[in-house]
Length: 308
Image 1 (tube, rainbow, N blue to C red):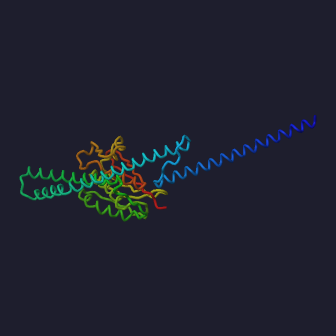
Image 2 (tube, helix red, strand yellow):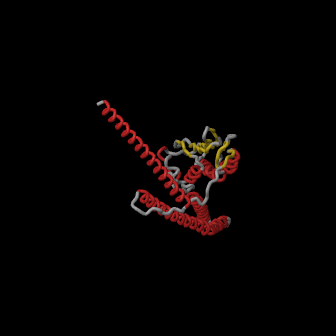
Image 3 (cartoon, one colour):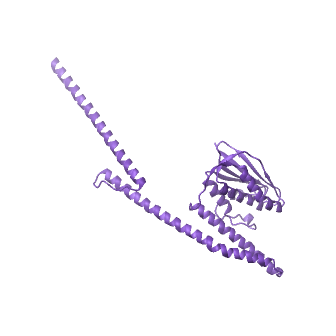
């Protein structure tokens, strides 16, 4: 009886041992399969990255289905990329054509309208010529702005942010806007700073000039102030004015393309300057915001990545 029990115990131990070995072998088999699958997937991804991917399995297996799906996806992606490139080239050509075809006619209109303004014309005729000159300048500004915007949006022109001092750029902007400000009897203040940021000098200067130009345009008395505040991750350039201000309900719209407030409909402008400014700052990994109250002026804050 005792021997029978010992025999059964030994049998159970053997069975358990076989099961453990089988489980270990199965686990090892699964691990090998998983590793091989990962190797195959990595190879597929590498081939996809260098553009040499083709299907290698043609059966009803899961791997074959995966390869087939990846092949279809890459084919569709390649077609989409090719179509996008073709559209980009079409836009590039269109932008170049517009820029070239309109430059000479507009320049001639401006030239002849200015020459006519110097002639001894009747008062009414002189008024017409002056209006013609204003509209031609407006059209010239619009076309130039649209060309710049289109080149930025399609990647034809790219920004190249580098580490640099903020002050030289602000001094350049200050000198550019001093004359139109003085003509309106406005004072522009510029605070000194040693702040450094990561930015594209040419395009950032243009973006800030758009804001400062608006400040001069929409301020009838008082002053405009340029100041800089340093934070850990950003450098903030503030442009504040004592101008007409912006209604609260309009502050979320002013950075939209071609948006023009009814409160400034009598002023010059086409509603693209702030949109272009926002696009430039975003491409530099920065951001812009506006704080304003109608009748009490505005503060535009441009945040550029700080040098760390």
